[in-house]
Length: 176
Image 1 (spheres, helix red, strand yellow):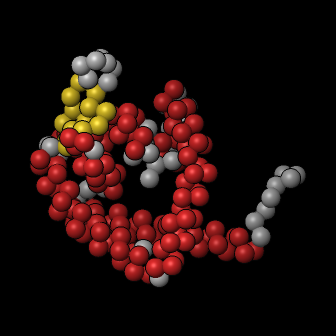
Image 2: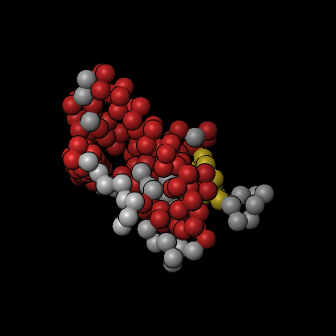
Image 3: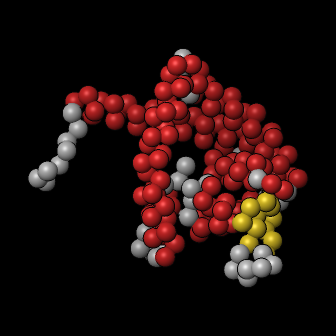
């Protein structure tokens, strides 16, 4: 393809190392959550986000945004969390299409237990390998990448919401 900006040898090496590191960190953290708490990271993220919200309650649309998920994917996750008794949904009195997700006491208790192992896994997989200076630089790099991709991911999620059959992986591609 004419005009393609191919990666230099150094960029190719960094890209591959980055992919490997992200995959390994994600695998370590996801495996720990699944093994010790019986939940995928997606469910943990929903519980954690709700735990930080006022009244442990968020509109489903805002929860989807904060979790970087399509509404349909989030709705499926919340349904599973409801089955476990960890989250409940309430209808919005002012918007018949809106609903609230509410973290239950049982869900908060499960999150508290899961968080202990989760923080150990994150620390082992990521922070223990870095110096304080590297943590600072990683934070700066992460923000730069996030800020660059946020508009694209928002557009992809909006497209997926408008036509779920046409963009089945849009929510997954921009999810955390």
